[in-house]
Image 1 (tube, rainbow, N blue to C red):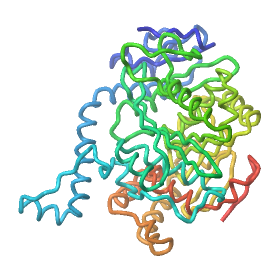
Image 2 (image 1 turned 120 degrees about the vertical axis):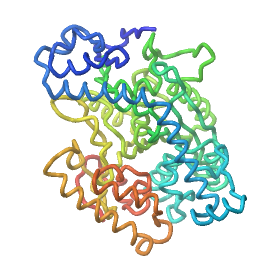
Image 3 (image 1 turned 30 degrees about the vertical axis):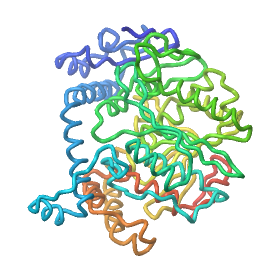
Image 4 (image 1 turned 60 degrees about the vertical axis):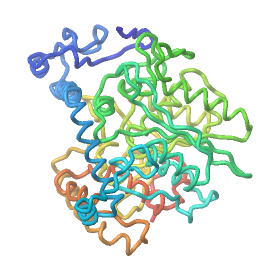
Length: 476
């Protein structure tokens, strides 16, 4: 089924499935992309003067998607195998005991559906409890809760329900798999909880980010297609598709899912929020997510604004994203800044150190993606600075490589000392330490881990949540 792009004023769509190897490399030597069947855009959108750098980025985007589609199944199998091994070691206490149990014939086998089974990402940071020192009246309470919810979103339903209900003493509202109309699969996940007491009633919506061995999610990240919405701006196509963009009608205000498919994320969550919040005039909600999940979290209110969902926008208390990639262009940022002001909700974008994901897609002449909102930038000491833009905004820089490697070295050293300086809750396991060693060669990858983002919300200052937006200052 072809996509009806009538809902957008302009667009540039990449179709990896319609290009062969020769045509793919031909991108690098021909600027007439409008003539290529794998680039769908109105006449004049892509000019003959298109730069080599932009063609190169389109080439990389399509190549990455084609490769991911090719290795999707083996990648999933490898990921499942690694997860199973890590959990096998965990339930048998350690590798040494596992070997002994093997020879004794009493190996304990993990159950993938149990509340104790951890995802690949969950094995980096096994913390379950909320920080008991951060109470509701602390300015960073919602940030800390949001990050723990974002971390939990990577786990299975039993883990999330047990964590929310038994450990956090909150109401579990459900974990969901949502339909992606372009991938024809349920590839978008989120869960909802309710933090309710006599003095507050907050619904938290946590979107799952990109799992390391999920080719579909990586395709969403690498898809640099975009749609321009009238009065809104240009938005990353892969993220829109993950949130619920429909092939045949785009973003209608109302929709009905057919063919027995799961619901689309935006519409299902919107309807659930309408129902939940109508039960209490004082109830509010928070949107959050790590990585891709953060992109979906900030895109959700954008679609609400597109549909003039004023009541829901006014009940939105805040958006907290962690390691979030860029979502749209400068015009989109201006549109969202206006929504922040008009509907009085906060948007905090956490960036830790040299995390490469917030620095993608590029903010340069070849691409038009830009960040907006309040950026909280944390260094390796978890000191925070409120900035308009994170340092080294496009990550790849020959001059910046050496400082990043040096920083990665000190992060590795810190992994052996942080439990002594900050307490046992901050102890890092061997799995994460191995990951930090990889950071000596590829700095910026370990910095995207949930471990460091949980630490930013616990060890960072509360004062930044009380500062005016766009105020630049250092807070220890």
